Length: 154
Image (cartoon, rainbow, N blue to C red; front, top):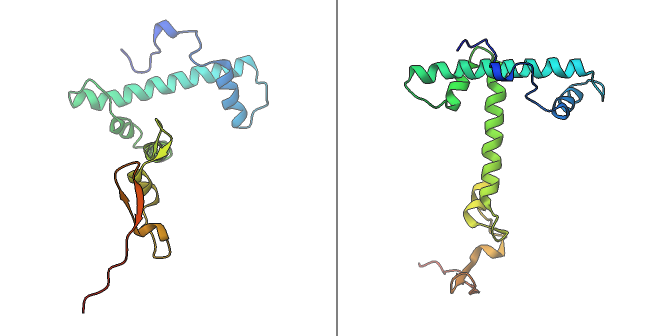
């Protein structure tokens, strides 16, 4: 299939909803109610851009003998445009931060896991924190027992 050709089954049909395109236009400075022609042209432009980018990303995957396209293939397709490449990297950095934050919070019982907090905070507790020297006795629902500081041997 020619990379520049639009899929015949989608020809003349909108791929995005009017509301999505309207919000995108308004976010970039358009009036609250755009003309239907403007929305139709934006839909066609976005669809063509996405299709061309996917074809460009598919070429290195085919050359590597893979059937699936990886993130690196999209980065390679955008290598000549630093703005697009930077935006791709920024979005995936934010996604990694969001995934780390979700991993820190155990969704099943709304408790924060110990390793998740350590990953998010990344700093050790100071001497002023009185909880630093407590020890859990008896598993999850056990009681907390204060550990006495050890005296230095001379």
